[in-house]
Amino acid sequence: MTHQSPLERLLRGLALVLVVCFFIFPILWIVLMSFQTNETILRSPPSVVFRPTVSNYAAIISGHLDSNVASMGIEFMRNLMNSVILSAGSVALSLVLGVPAAYAFARHKFRGSEDIAFTLLSFRFAPPLLVLLPLTLYFQQIGLADTYLGLIWVYQLICLPLILWIVRGYFEDISPDIEHAYRIAGHSWFSTFCRISLPLAGPGIAAAALLAFIFAWNNFVFALVLASADKQPVTVGALAFVTASGIQYGQIAAAVVLSILPVLALALYAQRYLVEGLSLGAVKG
Image (cartoon, rainbow, N blue to C red; front, side, top):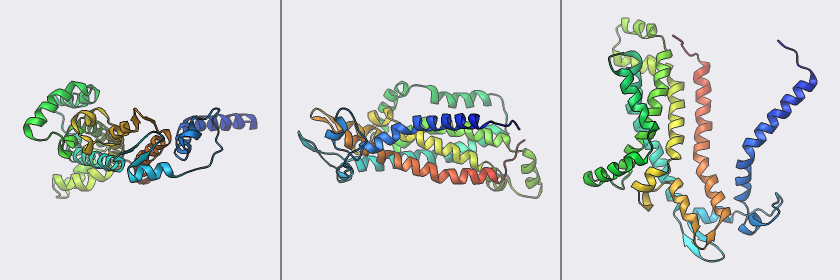
C-alpha cells in the first residue's frame, strides 16, 4: 500500500470537501430560500443571515398563496399525492411485468430475443412527443384520457425498459447451477424463481425500482399533455407558482423541498436494504 504524506492527505481531504460543497450548495440554498420572504431573497447583495419564517410552508400546505399583488389558491398537496400515486403505481406495474420478462431474457435465449430487448429499451430513447399525439387520440377513444390508470400505463414507457435491462443483468450474474440444483430437488420452476432467483436478484430489483421511481417522479411532458389539473403531479403543478402578478420564490423553494422529501426518504430507506442485500453475498456466474 502506497504511503501518503500528511500534505497529500490534506490536499485529498480538501478536494473532497470542495466537491461535496459544490454539489450540496444548491440544495442548501434552496432550503434556506424556503424559510425566507420574497424581500429577503431578492435583496442585494444576498445574505445567509435572515429571520426565518415558516409562512411559505404554511401557504403551500393550506393551498392559499398570498402575495403583495394578489392571492390565489393552489392544490400543491394534491399534486404531491398525484405524484406518489402515479410513480408508485407505474413502478409496481413495471415490476410485475418487467421482472419476469428480465428473467426470461436472461435465461432463455431465442432468435430475436436481443432485438426485442433492444426495441423495448429504445422506448427509453424516443422523445415523448413522438407518442403523445397517438396516445392522446387512443386514450380518448377507449376512455383512459385524464385517468390515473391511463397515466400509469403511459409511465411504463419510462419505467419498464429501465427495470427490464437492469434486472436482466442481475439475473445473468446468478449462476444457473443454483437453480438447477433446486429444481433437481423436486421443486417447480415457479418455486425456483420465487425462492432462489428473486432473493438473489433482490438488490438489483430494488435499485431498478428506485431509479424508475425517480424517473417517473421527474416526468413532465406526459402529465402536462394527458392530465387535467386534478391529476397533474408536482412537476406540472409547479407551473402555477409563475403568474402574471409575480413569482413567489420562497413558496417555490418550499414546494421544491416538499417535492424532494418523498424521493429522499425512499432513497434512504432503500439504501439500507441495498447494502444488506449486497452484504449477504452476490452470486457471480
